[in-house]
Image 1 (cartoon, rainbow, N blue to C red):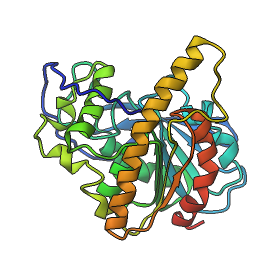
Image 2 (tube, rainbow, N blue to C red; image 1 turned 30 degrees about the horizontal axis):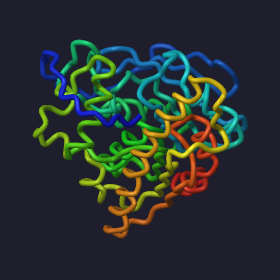
Image 3 (cartoon, helix red, strand yellow; image 1 turned 180 degrees about the horizontal axis):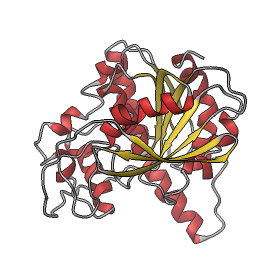
Image 4 (tube, rainbow, N blue to C red; image 1 turned 90 degrees about the horizontal axis):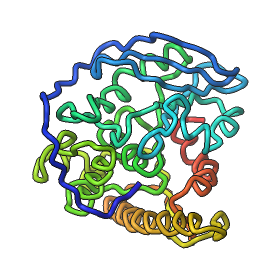
Length: 316
């Protein structure tokens, strides 16, 4: 989700967090279906249990790569990923020899390691969890081969690109649907602060004050060199209504107007990423759709469109 307002946040900060990556442990493992498993994983860095859903293929063919898929601003249902409820992921990946990891992440987290615990949102050390603690467990429990990709939509799109650029040795493929990718400059930072504030958090606890270098350290445009050598797919609409929009009620109009405005911002952001990768001569596949608002129906369409790029990077 892209927010166009600048909110600096004012909640009081609490103790500085020093992430302590260690050996995460599976506290509970429960198959929900032949292809879906719920994991409860203790994260040393966050000192709490994190629920993660894992899709595996219906027909398993030896060791396989893993794709981590990030949702948007937060999971509405903390027990079931939106990629399953709205994105059609279970059906799409059923016949594909890949593990798909769906972390049930905290709202407004940007899937990042925060500098400090937040009084409202708690301890966020998602980068450590996703890049250091969780992958060895996934490979061990689900016959992973050590090859990883990451994809995300909206806030998760920015987060996927951040994680890929900051951890270039871990990921060989990345996809981003309807995201923004700048955090160092005023507009990008303002958008991120607005998202965190919408959940009652203080973004100063995430990357510090407005001039803190941690904002630039998470800026995909600044750190785009970290994407070199990866299989990259990026998509966005224009904000114009298309085949999935309805205009039957006032609520329909509100959804179209808000989703359209957000996608206009994401379109601008995506063009900037395209320009930056071209400047660095980093190959990537961009899909600039002629219509489309910031909504699940269009992201469902993008999943199969992005799969050839992702699967190539995953070695399938």
